[in-house]
Length: 435
Image 1 (cartoon, helix red, strand yellow):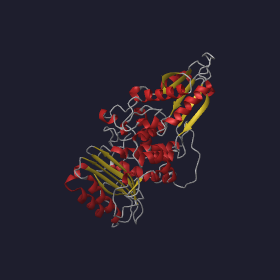
Image 2: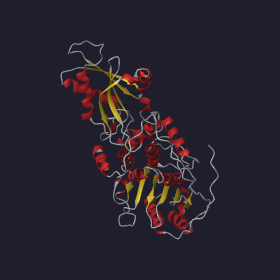
Image 3: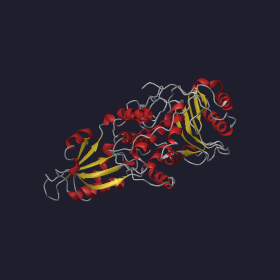
Image 4: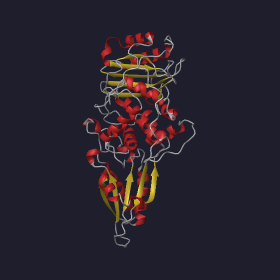
């Protein structure tokens, strides 16, 4: 299922000049600011402000809505500075961070290494589409190499193979609900994840599943394997001095980054989003990766009031974002050199992804590119809306609304329809926010 989704997303990649992906150890610099968003304290488009207030009605306290135009001017805002649970709108942050840090052509690697001491080891970076057939290739190559040089040269000697993985306590963000962890959307986040550690439900012990497949493949060839699971951090420390001398015997690469971004945003794939945040931060610990993402947001001039990141996918209820932060992020990314890739990663109203079944029969079809978010009691949607007055960057987060979908449709249509906004004038910007 994931593989077919990635194939279709590769076809939809924007036709831009392709630049080589930067090396992981030398990420591209943070994008220079193109000016601060004009976050005025009042309604700069009274007609649109009135439409927002009318749409939410008596539920105003449950909603945060912000609409920014192509100049970064805040046209209308309703509780835009109140932090709320964003659900999967969190992925807009994660994918922006990953695209900026890693570029559109970066690929996750899974490799079989031979170290200077002759030991064999499989290492991975969390490829969400790593298949059983691919892991079987690793077993076959390892069998042909015979394992550690310290073992007997007898053909019947077992292959010595290490598999490097994160410790079990890091497989899930600590505050993910235990009930969510058993479902496919809450599968454990590991470096070696066959089919994203999910079948119909989550694979609760991916290390054991991997070991069974490796053992079975080798045994079918009449060989034996002695598998050792090793801790990622411990193993990295042990190999630090000799890492450059290791030889890659076999490698399997993921789809390119621009397809992974689309898997995260268009199909709202949690596992992919979690891996992208970790890779962009160059650290697998979700807390440290969240801090790195937060610092990146701050460097981009995103409003930080109340902002709190706990994961990369939005499954954590500890996340807090404001609609103002998301709309300004969308506006900032529209100025990015890779803006087309970012927009192309989103679902499209009435046509593709999680928005394929929404807004049929309205002018929104094919003209709103966005990201949905859903948790119990939480509904969010943020994206880029094409209008006759240029793009508008809209974000809506509802925590506790009774019928949020209808309200969101009304607000998007109003944002697209209403052009009775004053001509741009210098607006008062909010004071700089404390670090």
